[in-house]
Image 1 (cartoon, helix red, strand yellow):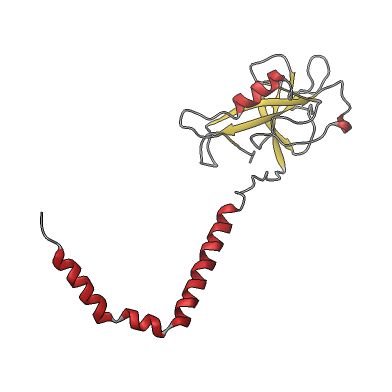
Image 2 (image 1 turned 60 degrees about the vertical axis):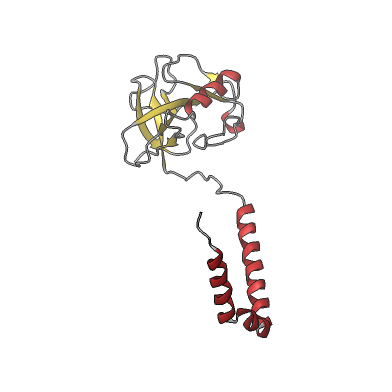
Length: 191
């Protein structure tokens, strides 16, 4: 093993030639200023670390996706309408409007993707007064529990279930579940 004793001697000689110790003892204000700046920098860094993360905010869209129960396809209508609404195909056989809200998602980061899926459909309970239904947008993942009077289902299902029921939570969990690559689905607004 090589002897590095000479390295210790070289470092000591370099330190003495720089006369750093003498310079530091002659400049106490500089040392105090640098120390204060360092402490302030560390404090700012720690405060930034402790701030809450980005709060997920839902964009206000002018249009929303709706699903035509009669022809089983998507259409676009004005945002903010409580379903069911009039669909392009007309009313259902029982005379009720055929348009229900559809939540369309994608796992792609490309905003122009065609790789989309309908996570679930939403309508209001016909037995509940629409004016008493609170509004919470389900484009934000984690909004599984919201007001009564909202019914949801998958496109393949025939029965509507309350969104805050056990079956409703299962449907919402499926819609917001990660794919094989671990990506969370994102809402795709209509164009």
